[in-house]
Length: 152
Image (cartoon, rainbow, N blue to C red; front, side, top):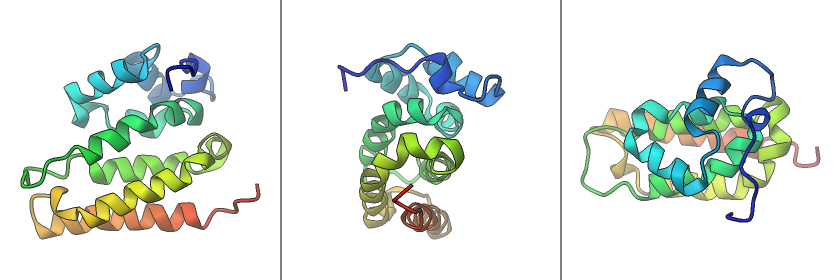
């Protein structure tokens, strides 16, 4: 990943003026993967939606942050869902429209991450209802990405 070029402002906002994409650029633009990871860890609740709104090229570059973050959630800490539900929603948004060609290669990794979340659902929620919501979010994400036509 260190050999890859940092995403440009255009990679974050390929729509030329999306305020949400510009917000993501404001916080993560110009950051290396490690710098962005540290930034995200400062306040995951605040930065989680930035992954939903950045363009597909930027999302693809920063996706390892989501993987590492969710896999690092400790067992036995049940104060909230650790952003697992909203991150599933954000990933799903990336697999639609003009972003699809830039993220399609992530499908196996997203499936593996979904499997991890589902197999470790006890880490993601303070009660059964919250864990159910997280599980449903990841199930829907997997259903969506696996329904995509892989030939286009």
